Length: 176
Image 1 (cartoon, rainbow, N blue to C red):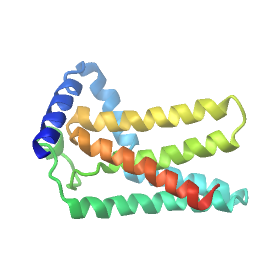
Image 2 (cartoon, rainbow, N blue to C red):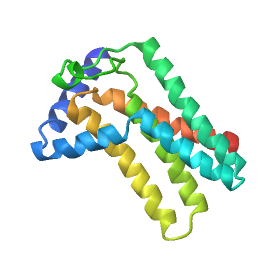
Image 3 (cartoon, one colour):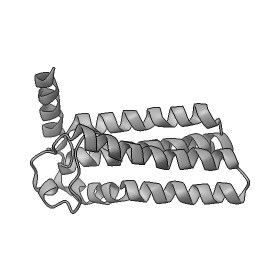
């Protein structure tokens, strides 16, 4: 199984990293915007707006999203998969483990929660536009991590999948 994962990661990484150099700057912008800290601030900001509008279930769901990001950090610590050996990783300020991707998890849990809330509470045409933009941005954050060499594809697939599952669990518990 381990050999199949390594082959998958290597093949997909090679394909993504062959993309034109002109996408490097946009990928850096996206990866920086998708940092877990930024996603936490986004969720907390949305929670403040929900609090001001007396939408307590929305506040709880967004705070649960923030808590889930913390749980992902603990999970990374215990799994302790090393990152790819790349220049990007060697220049990283914070040295954390690779699996599951914190950027992919944080953007997935935060942005899919916001997508769900937009689809549920915002008026048309934003009920479609905002969720699509949120999901596309979360996906682009994940791709940026592979393109830049910060993660293996399986790291971001796991992070995105776990983030989306966390959102589903939050929605089922709090039903905002």
